[in-house]
Length: 411
Image 1 (cartoon, rainbow, N blue to C red):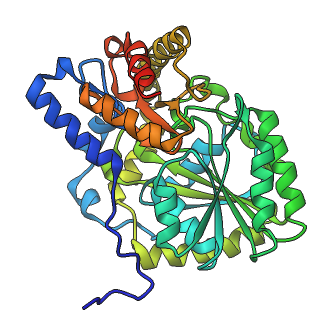
Image 2: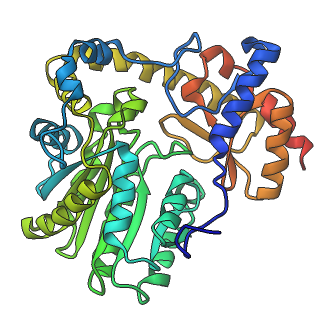
């Protein structure tokens, strides 16, 4: 007897990341950590192989009173100090002149999920990149949405042609458009779009908005690990040019920024030309927040505010150390990949590098061969994700050549 709704998808969830993480742990226990390359985990690890939990973040968190940790947030939209600080943190460094509002969410995931359900009707289509975090598609299915994918790349640049064609293929079939752009530090390729590419996207969406309202969901989960951190928000100034019929929803992840993955804190930042449009969307998002998660951890929001104001210098200095590690790790892997002709998607910055394999059957065979040789990675569409965020500098050395050797075997 099936007691769930008739439209429910009864296929068991297969989370490829956690499954491979488990296999990597088993291999470490059997062979020793030194004999295993664990490039599976999308979290920041130090050079000794330990999960990074910033001292500046958790020393402050430990000082928060237990009553504050136990208490409800002041509102299901988030604490006022948190909401204001998120807006300052995410868009304040750019000269963005749009009306805006912030809704607290359980991580960046909550912001993405909420946007899908509150923008599109069941049966409509959300537009995703073809190489992307797998949970986008899972969330779409959960919201009874279809998903159509644009090709991320045209050579070494953003594939604007495919993006346009994909949007136009659905624009006549639904009431509004919702497109996902994970930028900067794209998961899983590490690509960051240029300002020119963003300008072209905005101009095109403005044209589309003459037919239907359009929403750009900009997932910025990894923005605080951009290599040019000072200018990492400048592209958002392109948002100033959106039409009255275009809205941008920025999905922000405190979990990534603060190395507090388990505290589940983030935000959806609503941006539009008119305050009325923002308020209309805010009302709907507020109701979803109240109906689904009620409120976000009070202490997590207070901690974000305190760390990014009272302990700003300590936090930024500590984070800079690990951004430098990311630079070193990724540069080693990229340089050695180029030297041995290991094909990678265009990487600029961030947690991940992805090996380019267009044929998913070959990708599967390659992945199994890597596992058999104690190299643990994650399969993504048209490629293999290597989490340089979780590898030491020493583990990165020589890895590309080894991976190229196994890739050649799968020809």
